[in-house]
Amino acid sequence: MSQIHEKSPKHCANKQSITFHKKFNKKLFFYFSTLLLSILSLIFLVWLILHPTKPQFSLKEAVINQLNLSGPSLLNSSIQITLQSNNPNKKVGIYYDEFLLYASYKGQKITPETSISPFYQEHDETNLISASLVGIQQPVALSFTYEVQRDQGIGKFVLNFKIMGRLRWKVGSWVSGRYRFIVNCITVMPFGPIPSPPLSSKQGSQCSTVI
Image (cartoon, rainbow, N blue to C red):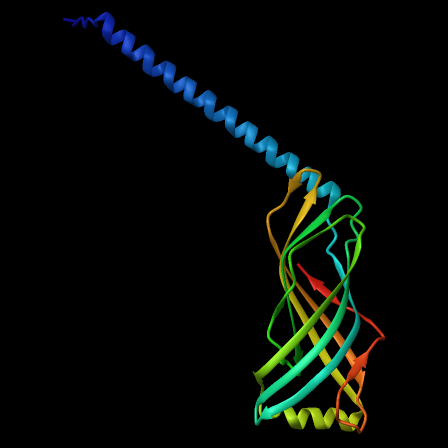
């Protein structure tokens, strides 16, 4: 004996409504997924076509006005540097949101970090950046005096400048997220028998940049 189940019109209407909402949600999800994928693909395509080249830095001048110990391992220093920054890209601008630099000697800091105000660099533009690096009772290793005397005997004083910061690429109205960059510059100064500053280098040197 077979059984016959009867469904009310209200039950059928509820089932049809649930089915409709499921189909609508699937279509909505598919639409937004396709839209998001298209936008990401467009951004990636623009990135591939333009392919931003990392900025180029060079050290134009460095002058040491003060470099003396005020204790066994406390250093007072005053250094003036001039950097050249070049954006080699033809269609990409660069926002420098953070720009910190300091001087180091034999792997140790001899000045605290100095901050340069944020700036924007147009495509294919070159800028000069000047900064004063001043350290007051900056802690250094006990071997600092020995290392300086040894360099004085050789006749060369090797100084390192490091830049750290964050930048963003700009293409038309589109601006990328922030990227960390690190720049390393080395200068070699003549260091004769007269120990007192100023020591200077105007030969210029190319810096390495990592993003």
